[in-house]
Length: 398
Image 1 (tube, rainbow, N blue to C red):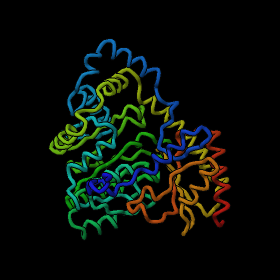
Image 2: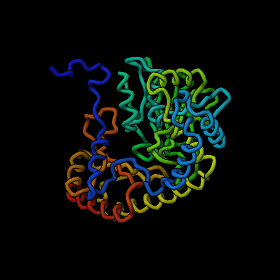
Image 3: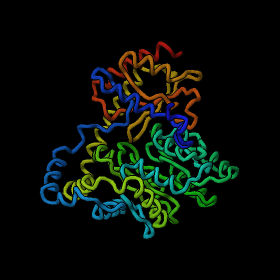
Image 4: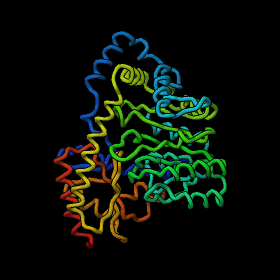
């Protein structure tokens, strides 16, 4: 007899990430993939990291290859704190822990707060990794529609008024995944007010905030937070290299202490060698200049993709025009299903992610899809969007 009937309630209804399945296609050399949220590999500081790796292993290998403490490598914690402070992020009561990517920080926050059936308000659509993490705790995921300037805070207020046991609000306020939308300052302020009024906590997920290539910077919600209402999660994946699997979580000391205990039983500590590598890179090289290079490249690729979409997509297909991050969100005419369009495009060797993947209700038909512009070279953006345009003109009106 198989084991499936013994699976826990926490996992038996979880579905694998459609993005991961689509990414398998990208192993084929002839596929043009706008699917994954992959940083541009040519921006990885490979030579610098290679030199630092050799130095660390030759001179401090006995530290790098040993167990570390769960909170993280102490020098890196201090480096991260100082860097966040330059953005006005963090108060005296906040502490920082190093985590195995922002995904782990989000998961740990959910684990600390959520009992089965507790409510967590999520932007709809939102990041599939976080949604699946919340589902794993049998939480009540409550969707709030995304508008052009962020989540619908009027709908959020109504939810908080009428729904029992809501403990958390999860948001990606800057260059949101998957929409590319940035929440307005007024909504950031209102979100904090509502969290205070109804005594819920905010998980602010900010992996893309430094990737602005147009427009004006906005303060993070954590910058606006004066009471420790925000659990702030960031990542080295988009500004250094995702393979390091490093991020950070900042929260009030008593919250972070519980997250650290949960991490201790999960993975003991994040990769110590990778932590030392990141710390030395931040100390020996100019990360700001490095990020400026990433911004410039992504700005060029985003602009090119939008120009190609303007040329090739039918007028009945609308899309966001992000000022940073990695993603463009596209909307087909009402009644269409983006999964059908995806299948037709994959048959022509172009991949993207259908919108249902990012919805709280994954089974409902969805007429939206996500495109990534960061990881494909310019010629592939041109040819891939032209192919998509041909498919879309064949199935859309207008």
